[in-house]
Image 1 (cartoon, helix red, strand yellow):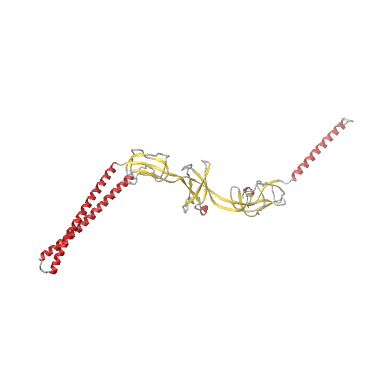
Image 2 (image 1 turned 60 degrees about the vertical axis):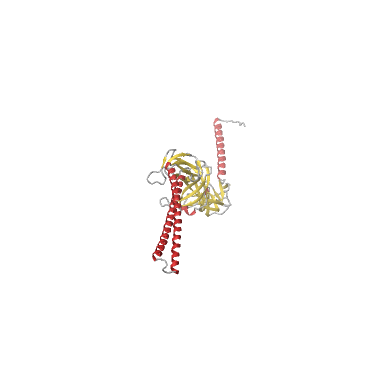
Length: 409
């Protein structure tokens, strides 16, 4: 657009200044209008609905895996290691031969025991024959004495008294010989039983020369080699050396120090999650027993959790974290943790009324987990609460809302 300018230079300058002033005023007026419109728009806040949810409180406890059972396999008898067929890391079955011993004296003692049994058998046979002879002699003497007594009964004075007395004495002597023969027979029988018992003892010790696995497990240590001298495991005068150490690792134990506050909620049979960070995996365990006694020094109670380990993925000594559930609520009225204002002297939430106005409400809280918290008083189901930053919000302030995803029931 062209404008014709005429007149003096002073008029021209004055006209230009007036145009610049009008342009500046117009821009300032437009900016004020825009700012006024922005200030009048209600702020947009994220909200969530107060809704029922299942909440649980867990205590995270750390423990170290231990074998279900572990023993150092000792020798029952002293001897030299003839052979040992397992080494560290080998899996063994119950009853499997681990090693055999060599005891040269054992064979001699077994032969001696067999000879003693033969001698005892012979003595028993001789004692039995002696008893038979004594019984036969006693029967004859008794018969003779009886006949003489019958004669005296019918014909008094026919037999001299001395002969009668001698017959009676022979009868008594034969009876005594029978008693002695019976005693000798019992002695021979006892010797035979002792000989058999000694042979059984030696045969049992001979079986101890073969060392077997007490249960299914893994050999975690080997102490002896072929030719090593092994002392009897029951010896108290010498330091006995074990052959191997066997651990049952297909079932592992965790001994958890449950704090006193959670002791009352421990239940045998409860299934727990066991996280092993070194493997990045979670396993399932079961509470099988607890001490039922609180240690005064730590104010904790030892609780054992069994964890099946059929593939031997877990190794004793690994650390694990166990989530032990101590409290649970079903259908508890809940809101997100970020919806609770904990900065003031009391707990409160910022609700949004149906008219879109902020209403600050004090609440009483209950159980909480990593996402939600139970509201025991102050809210009703379906009410909207502000989640996140609440800076600048005040009671009665109008707001716009955007609804967040609902919590999982």
